[in-house]
Amino acid sequence: MIDFRYHVVSLVAVLIALATGILLGSSVLSGPLYDNLNKTTDQLRQERDQLRGDISDLQRDKNYAAKFTETLAPTAVSQRLTAERVVIVALPGAQKGTLQQVSNIVETAGAKVTGQIGITDAYAEADKERVLDDLVNQLRPTTVDLPQDTSTYDRAAIEIASLVMTKETAQADTPPTGADGGVLPGLKAGGFVTTKGHPDNKATLAVLVAGPAPKASDGIDRANGAYLTLARELDTRGKAVVLGGPESSAGDRGVVNALRSNDELASSVSSVDTADTIYGQIAVVYALQAETNGQPPGQYGISGTTDGPLPPQATSG
Image 1 (cartoon, helix red, strand yellow):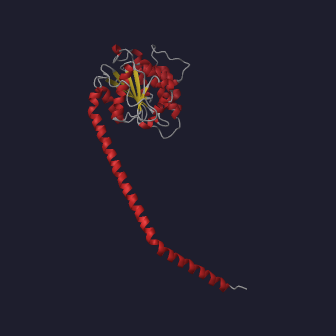
Image 2 (cartoon, helix red, strand yellow):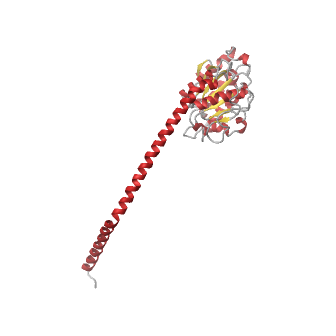
Image 3 (tube, rainbow, N blue to C red):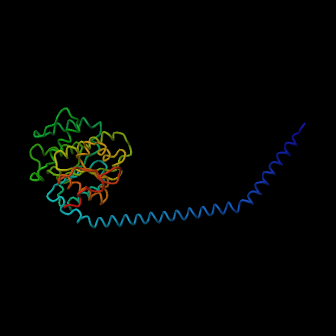
């Protein structure tokens, strides 16, 4: 019978053999293994440094191109919107810097910005719809027809667009009269819009500026639908409308993407998905001019399938 001491001796022998094998193996392999590891580490370090250099070069080139374009922008847009009046509509999330830059470039193009309407988050919130509907009905001027078989957002958009837009240059920049004058102040008092300047002085063109696409999807379809309804009505009553935003606005949940996914609306309203850059701001001007010259609306930018950076006849004066 095998006793306990035999098992102990056997186990000790196995452990000694294993330790001996490890020592022998490490002494044989340590040189090549360490050399390969050091070689791989050096190679990865070199690739990292190369990538850092490439990124630095790309950023330098991007900054140079933007500065170059910014320098040429006044010449590129000069007199393209002469005698036009433009209202800026800031959708929720629109960046102040982008709003100011868009306003500046349309003025550089010869247009006058009548003012800015800010659409608040409350405008498209489900629990505020009844309040908005009641307010729109109360504020309705007698000259504005609000079909009762349409949604709250249809009627709100019709009322706002009827107040701020015109196709007639002779009517541009005229202030509201009578009951018309209470529309935007009433919506502002209700917390649905903000105003800057005199956006109720009629404009011939409109630029809606969107912010980045929201991260959460709750209520986004409802909100985008409300904003696009406003864009549609502004376009119906004016010469041209452009919806602009950053690249993400043309991605999932973005309002620019929602516009481009709607074939009917995309055939009447232009969009630019680089409106936060000088390139996109020039494209906004060119898109407005193209439509006033009778060209069809287009979808411009870099995200997804677009009509390119600018309208086809953008170089014509």
